[in-house]
Length: 247
Image 1: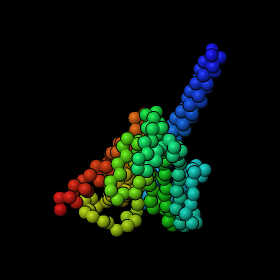
Image 2: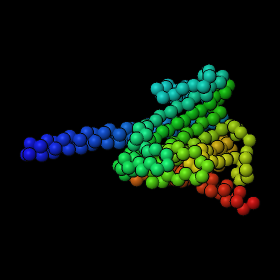
Image 3: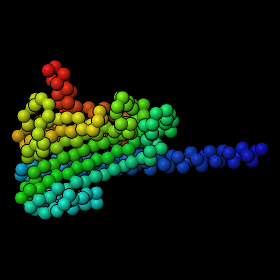
Image 4: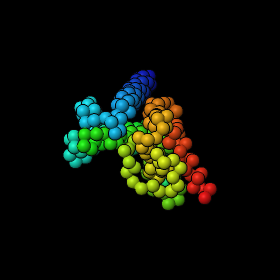
């Protein structure tokens, strides 16, 4: 009986040790993603739409080639370049959105500061001049914050935000136009915002619209709304919704 008790204790210690190592490894990966994300955001901000030239873009391509990819051809005449860095947990740890699933293990994981995250960025070049730049952050929501209205697809939701500067707006405006040099709209379902702005926008607003909070990738308590990641875009979206509802 004593041997069984000793074996059980050793087995428990071994299991806890393995789980602890897995937690440390995952936390380390999240912090590494955040560190790379900060460097990437700094590099994207350094591009000056309408003024930065092909050699400036080439430096970013060389630095981020491991995570980057081109769309079609990429040269001084025309180039669209995208960078993606992802840290994804298995779905058994992030949860299943199917009706009736309790998701006990994902709920525990949510309380341990673990989550799936991704950052993306990109830029375009036309005739040797940088014509656009953008950055995006995506962080999974904890199971306790999931909310699926009737008719909405049941997929694991994320907070997803994208913001970028363009030499001209990529698409026609929809809804009320409150600011001539910037636009904001829902991006993907109820959990996403995309912001676009022109070089003519006020410098303070341009800075605010690229001021992503990367702490949502690593903080122990999860972020629960887009305003915790990019407050300026969240503010503009609420203003747009209020304007639409008052008409």
